[in-house]
Image 1 (tube, rainbow, N blue to C red):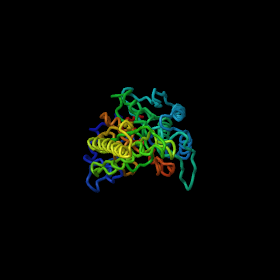
Image 2 (image 1 turned 120 degrees about the horizontal axis):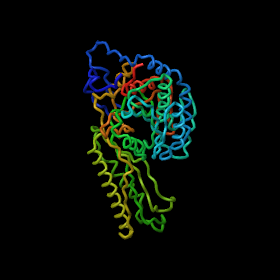
Image 3 (image 1 turned 90 degrees about the horizontal axis):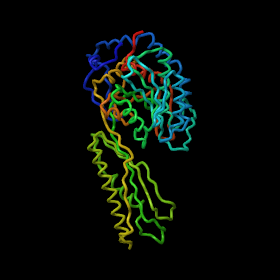
Image 4 (image 1 turned 90 degrees about the vertical axis):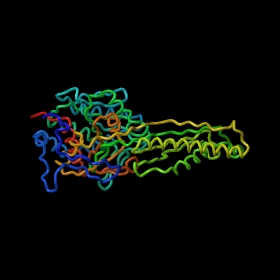
Length: 438
């Protein structure tokens, strides 16, 4: 059948507002009066091949969970995703896909459709937030699997494989070509570099982008949360804590500046946040440090608010520096012994939003309707930010199961019910890629 278009989904409800993070706005299924029967599933959803693929996704969940554990056990700290990427490349090749690795490290596996110029991208990120040396081997307790990165994004990577295998085994042929991609640089200072490269490479050929991130089936992210990551560095002469007391101290100056900045008022709407996520500097307890640095995460649903917040950070850090220098002068040190201030932007994530009447959201709604799932709209920061900012249709969605404590050493995953998420991903993908008649 032809691929879905916006016009083909006019029965869907219009006007649902994008909710902020963790809001509870339901994702409407259809524009009908109460008590009206739900629209029948399209014929392709009831085809023998699609039903076979859905059955396959429910049959092999235990084996898929073990694969997820093996993937997670391969460290993938920021900018060091190559080993995990090589493993994923082998598995995607075994699933019958033509695989290549691009020059930034994205593993791109192509499944040809009737059209080679119309592409649907199903992507899961390889990297974790955890530094090199973090213990990532899993332990099991009371049905849960504990390991850093087991859900974010071991779940997404496992789902990428499961969907590719199910489509192969059921011999599902699509109208659009599907790219199954394990990409780099989604987390932190990776600054979405993998997705930026994909959008640059494939450009207008990308009709739809579906990012698999984490486990939940309770929502779909249809709006990208804008953010900026900033590093602030102060350096000075250093010295001995006793004999050089009074010399300007970079840690003291940053502490003064941070104390000012954290008093900054931010609005509830548009929702805005800040976080001083790391601080470093100094050599010993009895040394005045020659250098200190902080890294700060700024986020907002509004670009103007984000700019205001960054301006406040710069103003308050400068104020802290000035305060420290004034204290140093009062203790008899001279202006020549000053502190040097440097701001570095580590990353900029643009915002964007997918229209409620889009074909991609319609495909999610149809999948939820078919599976009896209820979900809501949400704004978050994911790989989908980049295509959304470029005006493309993109979402991020979970791949099934349950999880908690992402980005912490206590992260866990429970695979119970993961088949719902896998089937939801498959049906959403096929809803926009189009299924060729049997």
